[in-house]
Structures are given as structure tokens and as C-alpha cells.
Length: 109
Length: 285
Image (tube, rainbow over all chains, first blue to last red; front, side, top):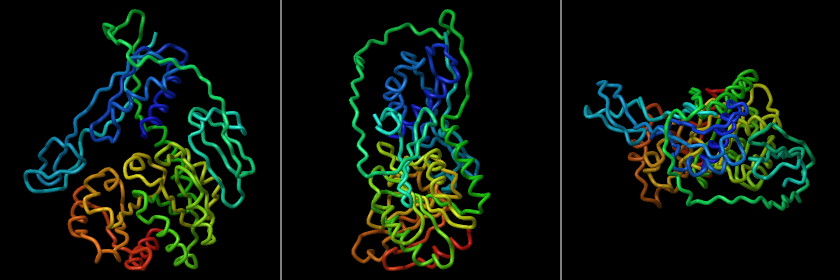
């Protein structure tokens, strides 16, 4: 459950950036290959936000699918794991999308 | 509540215990409040935590969501979620580089033999190089006690509910450890094949340990860890005659997630392959 500590860090960062304003919406971007489970972040968010300017804020999570690019033939393909096999037979695949972990924006009042 | 500093238990994410002095330091999540005090082993975290928290889990979220709420402002942040840890890890890395310290982050599932490997490595090489050790576990100082018998400096970090070490905990631990110049700092992470892969501590590299009793498909079941590591030590090879472990398949799986991985077969108890591991250490110090 590293998501609890990560959610605490997210809440602490956004609280600081909000500078006393109330946060009503927070948008994160989480890649499918990032080893962070969006549902676990959602689960932790209400608990971590309690008593902070983020209390009651809507949490939006933009999920990014995994994509790989073959280092041999340059073909791109969907990736469901950090590894895969290209149609050309190569296993030398670079992950080009799906490892994102970003705090994108907040809406304050 | 912690009887020493008055912090709420939820505020203390880890405890650093200096095995040489008995001092302990709390690491907090929200603030940088730490305190040093003599560690009496009767450290009871008695707290009357009567915090009324009525949270209705079946609350209806049927609000019409408009992106521009009246009078609201959207502020772009674009901050990496792990940015804080990554910044602290870079500070640790700079500290290690300035001291010419080789810091290695040992990661594996529980029971793969990390502590045994450390004991053996230190005892075999301590006349040739200086070692000190950070031990990460959720609870107990058992591993630190084992390392202490080798005669090197050791600090235990107990992460409590936490499943990994992070850069902030490591910074606290290293401050207590006070490693010598031109030495090796071995960081034994919490036994866990998932979370430690995400958290840079400022180490030179991660060393993954996989014992052959665990099954050859671990590298593809837990690809993040094997991708994050630079070296894979396949431990307990002395047990291979009693197991149905496909060594070639294991190596193939490991290389499929990390084509640059250096793989060394070892037995930390019987000594097989350790000369290759020791040579790697000497080449990297």
C-alpha cells in the first residue's frame, strides 16, 4: 500500500500550492504501468484530505494506457506489462507511455 | 500519541534506530520535526485516539460536474507525484558521491536471503573494504542485531505500516550511520517485490535478490523490480538439486524485462558464485 504515503504527499503538495484557498477539484494523471493503482489512491484520498483544504474535493484521475516502441524495428504496440515481444521477434522494447505519475491541475475557490 | 514528541501516530511514518548509541529518531510525513533521545526499549505508543470521524461511505456523488465552477480558478501544477522523493534522493546521491561511498539498495521478497548475503559479504570482505548497513523492516531490530555481530556500523529503520524505504527515511538513517569516506553502504530495503522499485533512495543502483525457492517466473510477475535493478543475484543455488527450478527460463524472463541486467548465481550460505559478486563490488567502489 504505497498509495497511502503517496496520497499523503499529494495532499501536502496541493495544500501548500493552494495557499489557504479551498480546493474543489484535483486532477492527476496515472499511467497503467506506473505501479500505482488509481482505485487505491481514490480510497486513500478522502482519508488524507480530511481536515485539509482538499476536504470534499472531487478527485479526477486521467489514466494513460501503456505503449511500447521496439528498439530494433521502431514499431509501436500496446503494452500491458513493462515487457513484451514485438512482432519482429525482438524483446528489446522501450516503454513510451504508461509510466506517467503527475499532479496535473487543481481548481480552487 | 507518541509519548516523546507528542506527535500523532499517523504523523510518524518511520523510526530510525542507531544500534551503536541506542538513539532513535522519528520521521514524519507532514513536517520535519525530529527528536533524539535515548532509546529505552519500553517505548509504548499509548494514545487515546478518540477522533470522531463520521464518514458515510454511501454518500451520493450526484453533483453536476462543470469544469468551471462559479468563481473558481483552475491552476496548472504539472508536478511529478514522486518529485519530492526524487529531489531528496538526489540530495542523498550527492552526499554519497562527495564521500565516494558506494550505496547499494538491496531489494527482494522477504526470505530471499538478503541479510545472510550481507553477513557473509561483510565477513569475507571487511579486511579489504569498509562497510556500514541500513536495515529496513516494518518492525523489530532483529536484522540489525545480526549485522551488528559482524562488527560494522548499522542503523535500523522501522517503517511501521510502510512497505518500503523512501529517500527521507534514508537521509535520516544515513545521518545516524555517519558512513566513512571510500566505503560501501548497504541498504537492505523492506522485503517486498513491488513498492521499493518506485522509490529512488539516492543509491548507485538496486541489487535484486531472488532465491531459487521462489520460482522462475518472479521476474515477469513483478517486472518493475527486475527492471529497476542493475544486478540480479540468484541466491540459494545450492538447493537446485532439490527443486524444480528452470534456471534458463528464469534468466530469460529477467532479461525480457531488463535486457541490460547482470545476473550472478550465488549461494550466500555455501559460497558458490560469491567471488563474482565480490569482484563486481570491487569494480564499482
